[in-house]
Image (tube, rainbow, N blue to C red; front, top):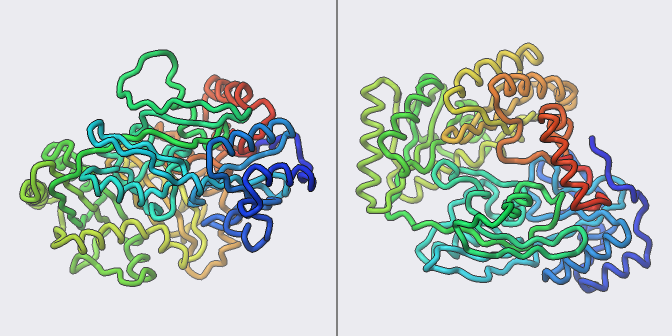
Length: 479
């Protein structure tokens, strides 16, 4: 794992008082019960310690915090909604790192309907932004299973993907301008709404996806899209994963940009949901080895979306690709279909230990990758269970390996590294990525170093050293 900053001493009482004075005593949490939600993450793999949690409400307060941190060499850990799955938002166990929560920077500063943009602060919850756009008959297309608690700053810091990437791109593609507080306390403000700007380096993209290691994102200008006038959701059963690839090609030809979702799922993942998620209902009369969820959106009408979906499924049946399919009868059933997909990660937890991989490979190679990676895993863990699902339309799979039935989680985690290597070796063979949308955080630091071309790694390290010479900005993550 990478080194943290050189200051490994717990901040003394006087220094803590100086930080407290910036935000006020009510927003410098030091009670262990109050701190607990900020030092434990969803997977419970990286519990941390912190002397307290700072909750600033303004950019000026964050700037003052970073100036003091720079002066004293104090490590700062930015944190959004604490939904990350790679430990990037967690302090270490030293008790020397201060958590800085962005939750109070939660204003939507402006929705510009004419330019179809929104200027939003980092602590705004993703779902709240979606709902605000919807009231203006617009769409903010980033959609995640954790959208009820994930914050925009974290989405930007990790370049979040989600289910809308196929049609709208990832978070980087949705960002026009950004505001960042640097480790020195300086504020980089570039909250412009320009879609075209060739004046020098595109600095905003230096910070998007940097996981808080170069600065703290405090606000952004984001793109909005026209709200679809019609949307249809289809649930499809398939006999073979290769049929999913053929169906995706068919749907892409027929629907073009109206194809806004194409999610792939193995039957075991659905079975976990049906077993462990309250209210989950099987969409089809029989189980199939694989499923896809197809979303068609139309800017014209509901009838147009329905017609497109029916054409795709009819042609899929005639080509022998589709075993069975159903189109959601109403908005409630459409939401139920999406919930089946979005709770697949949650439904793995009751099944015991799970070794998760957020990978991407070229779309055309997905069936071969799934087969070859699984053969590699079985050599390490012959009785492991594959729970594979993800955004097939953009090549991103959550290739998760669940422990054998009856095995102790601790025993399964002993081969964590072996299973990771087995999967990542195949990813490299397919010229893919070991991190498609979750980021590097603490989980994949060593793998990033091992797989990144030396020149690229050197450039990243030099950029980190230039902007954060004391390594006080989220140390121990990414690099």
